[in-house]
Length: 99
Image (cartoon, rainbow, N blue to C red):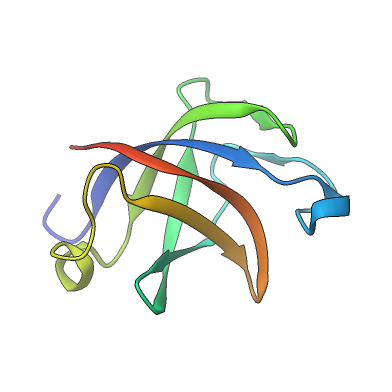
C-alpha cells in the first residue's frame, strides 16, 4: 500500500446531542482525520463488513489514510483521534497500532 496505510484505532462516535452524526453510519464511512492542525480524508473500516457504528459505543476499527506519505511522520501510536464531518467532530479515540 504505497499511498495508503491502515491505522488501528479505538474510537467512539458521538451522539447527535454531542454534535455527532444525526444517524448511525456503517463501516466505510469517510470522515476527515485531524493530524496536528490539518485534516485529511480517511475511511473507517470495522472487522464486520456491515457494522453500524452506534453512538457512545467504543469500536476497534481500521482507519485507511489516503494521504499516508504526507502524514506518516505526524501519526503515531497513542495519538488522539478526532474524526470530523466538516467542522463537526463526530468521533474521538486513540490510535492503537499502525500496519
